[in-house]
Amino acid sequence: MRREMLTWADVDKLIDTLIPQIQTVRPLDSILMITRGGLIPGGLLAEALNIEHVLTAAVDFPSTESAGLLAWPSFLQFPSSSLLVGRRTLIVDDVWGSGRTSSAVRGRAESAGATPFTCVLHFNPYRSLFNKTEPDFYGAITDAYIVYPWELDRGLRNIPVGDPQSN
View 1 (cartoon, rainbow, N blue to C red):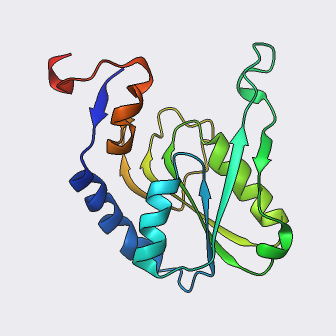
View 2: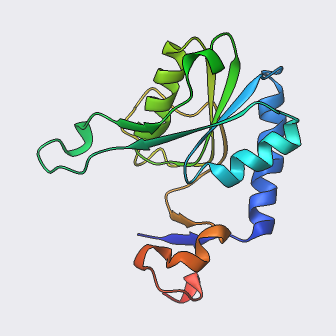
């Protein structure tokens, strides 16, 4: 699989691409960041868009061979409905790969009474399990495995560090 290593300048450009898209649905009342990937982009967007009501959600999909990609999510952390009801909420993650995580969080936020909008830095339509669903906002379309600058010091998930063009 092709991989792409981003710099902080690349991330800034993606955020700059997202801001005008997101401003089309303003006002937003809250931001719901999906851990861990959505924490940094969500924080950057919350600051840029002046959103003060900041929440987090942690989702786990069991990796059982029998369930495969059809496994039901387990919400390790999710805000109470009282924090979402009636709020226009931006749900932020780093990547929409299969789409399962963003879709699960969106569904749960919607059932809590929020009006959710999904947002990612990268959308990979080639891996998405949802043919007719995509993020409401995305910075770029990719088919690559993206390595963000905040991931460089935690081992790159067994990917050797170096020039991505030389591998």
